[in-house]
Amino acid sequence: MAENKLGYKNMEIDLENNMSIDKIENVEPIENLKRKINIGKLNAPPKAWYYLGTVKSIKTTPTPFSPWGKPLIAYRNKEGIVAQYRHCIHMNTDLAKGSVVNGNITCPMHAWKFDKNGKCTDIPGGNHNECTLRLPTFPTHIVGGHAFVYKQTIKRGETPPTMPFPAFEDLGWDDFEIGKGIDFLSDSPWYLITANGFDICHFEFVHGRVPLIKSKINFNSNNHCSINHNYKNISQTWFDRLVRYVYGEKMSLNYNVFNGNMILSRTGMNGKSNYMCANVQPLDSERSKITIFPLTPKTIAIKQIPILKHIGNFIRRIIIRQFFLAELRSIKSVRLLPENLMESDRVVTQYFHWLSTAMHKSTTKEETHEK
Ligand code: FES
Ligand SMILES: [Fe+2]
Image (cartoon, rainbow, N blue to C red):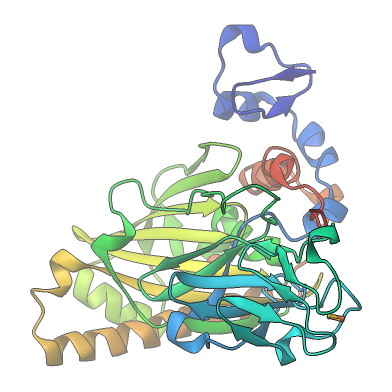
């Protein structure tokens, strides 16, 4: 089996010729691609960044969360946000009922204490140095007042590893004003939400966006996949008519998926760019939660007159909500049936293949209870 520099394995491919992944994927028979799509693997939440909530909403006392279906607690301290496993490693007591004193969470049952890295720092009536267990603890990251948690435990002796946080190529997070998250619940598995941007045909039939040139998928790395679309907006919904009236009918979409669950997109209309971030959380194998953040480049935000800015943001949020409600309605009963994928589904098949192979290479079983 050959392996290219991104670790993306392809059987029967001559990599000596330095073919790009795109070329490899475009010559790989569709039957080969779909055979390697593994729904069992896809059902496992990916090792990725998950949205916790606004920093303000996370209290200084432990608050329960379950960003990828596993019970966690999070609390805020002077340095940031601490996210840990919700159940005590001693006898499983619910730490959401515990307290945080001097940066240590104290279990309400036998008062064991754990620091921000999950290390046991006190066992009343015992010796904590003999405790070989650690309370599983997860890296967190804050952007624009919003907290995210990464699905990988911090190991002993490690300072929290700096997992790269997804970002646009040209603008950093500090360059944006990040709007309040808009939440959606979906009856679709998490991987179908992000895959939708690669489902070429549905753009025309669901969204009334007729392709102007062929969209091409790009496998940027094991954790980042993107696509560029150029289309004409012929949709008859009121919000698309409004958008067309203001910006014209031509649109472009640069759509990036990081770690399978984070979308960063840029829509271009008549020279204007509209940025958005979406974070997908699996609730179970059939349902997901999506949080969408409208992003406004600060260079634009500072020039806006406050009242017009509020009105503009209000309208933008309504349009985002309407667009995604229609989107979620359209994919409500859609399920991935690899055996039914055809040549006309090549791009989305490539995406699922990438999710099952390259991206999932970085997903291992969650490590727990190791010191
Ligand atoms: S169950 Fe938590 S200290 Fe015993
Ligand atoms: Fe869609």
